[in-house]
Structures are given as structure tokens and as C-alpha cells.
Image (cartoon, rainbow, N blue to C red):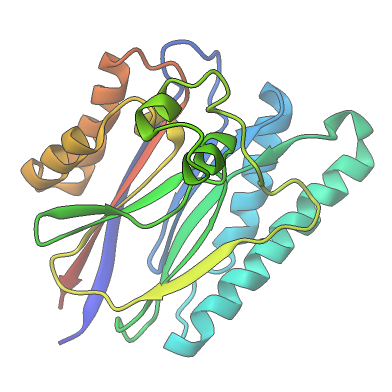
Length: 241
């Protein structure tokens, strides 16, 4: 039995922002979401440059090549952003989050790269698990015991990230997973995860069988919650072929 990754994505500017700084990619082997920051034009540019670099990783790779491939794409993204800042110093401070999932051509391994506060969730056997850790100030405060998770959700500085792709040195999180048929993945920007709670995410991922319909429904929930930020949702299923 060969396992394959099939995905669909929806992205929306939300109800407050004038434009959309998120970038998404859904390909044969790779799915990715990036959330730009640093002003409208610069945020667009940063997420777009990062995604253009990541798309080069969307090729058939062996299980052993996955993490090196993702690492190389992240290094290329960092270099592109650094070049853009060097060309125009007013762009200094722009950056982007990145969360991406790459499937091997064998279907036996998935590799994940993560930096920033976009998220990846895995729904397996009816249980939703957040598999990424937010690179944010409030997450550090929670881990230090200074605030609770509930307080973090409404903290005035909850949007402050501790690292992102900005053209300088970074320490992305890399890991691998052994996929199972029936797994459902959600990759999203914080415009979804900051508005829709884990219970609603779980219920929607379970109830909506169609990937595109599910992604639309998730975005609709964020819009109903006020849509204060750009919203992106990628729903990816592991299927047996």
C-alpha cells in the first residue's frame, strides 16, 4: 500500500486588513503556509519570497532527503529576503512565518519545518494534536509559568514572535512523522488559530469530509469570529492508493 498526500487550501484577507500578506502552496509533495509581517508591501514580499523558495522543494524525494531538502529551501528563502532588504533598507524588519510539510515519494515519511506562529495540527483517530510550538513571547511566558494559556490567548503582546524568516540566522524546527492512512493535517496562519478554538477545529475537521469544503468552513468560522487578521487554512489528507 502506498500512501499519498492530497490537500486543498483557502486564504482570505479577513475583515479588518486591506490586503492579504499570507502565502500558501498546495502541491504534489509539499504543502506550506507563510504569514508575512512588517507592513503591507514588505509583508507581502517576505511571504512571497519565502514561498517561491519553498516551492522548489515540491519534487519527489526519498525519505532520507526530506529534511535536507526543507533545510535547503529555508536557507534559500532566508537569502532571498536578505537580498531584498539589502536592495532597499526600508524593508529592514520585514519577515514571515513558515510552516511546511513535505511527503516522500515512498509515502512512508513526512517531514515538517516550522518557524514563527503559524501552526500545524494532526488529526489522528479523532484526536487533534498541535505538533508545532509557537515561536512567540506569550508562549515563552506560558512555559515559564508567568501566565496561563488562557491569559496568553488575550495577552496584548500575543502577536510578538520570537523568531521568523527575516534574512538573518534562524533556528527552524524540523521533525519527521510516519504517516497513516486516514490522517488529516491542518496547516494555518494565526488568523485562524487565534480566533477558532481547538474544539471547533476538531469538530470541523471531523465533520467536513471534503478537503476544500473543510478549508472553506474553517475560514468561515474565523470570519464569524471577527476576522481580525489574514486567514489561511490548508487541509491535507493521507490516503492509500
